[in-house]
Amino acid sequence: TEEQYTEQQMRQQTQRRSYHRAANYSIKLAYLEEDIRVARALAREQIDKVSIQRMVEEKVALQRRIHEESISRAPDILARLRSHTVWEGMAVKLFFTVHGYPTPVVQ
Image (cartoon, rainbow, N blue to C red; front, side, top):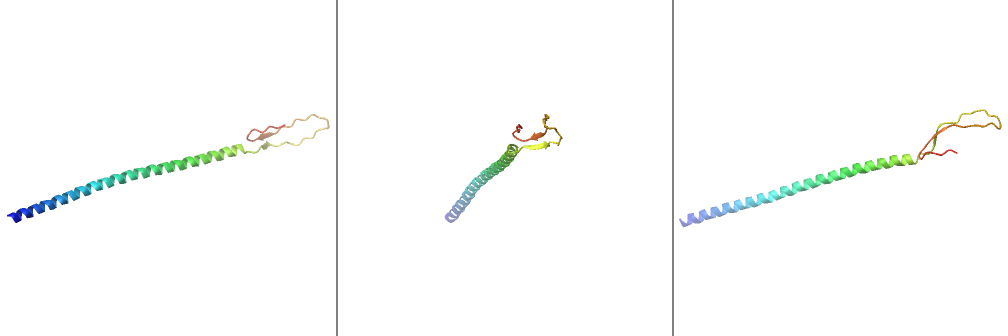
């Protein structure tokens, strides 16, 4: 009977150890799963930040290019002067259309 009792105690101890190992493993697994979830969320957030930053940089580059094009536009004569015959001493008015940025001043 004492041998049976000792054998039964050994089985119970083994079962308890197995249970505690399984419980400990489950707890560690839950922590790992939570760490993975947090890492995924952080990675997704980082990817979103990078894509937003890239979109902003592209938009700023486009705005800069548009701004530079509007600033550096040389005067362009849209309607050229037409040839006219005039006599010496005659008053003449010349008309033509110029476009540019900033608005050109014709003197």
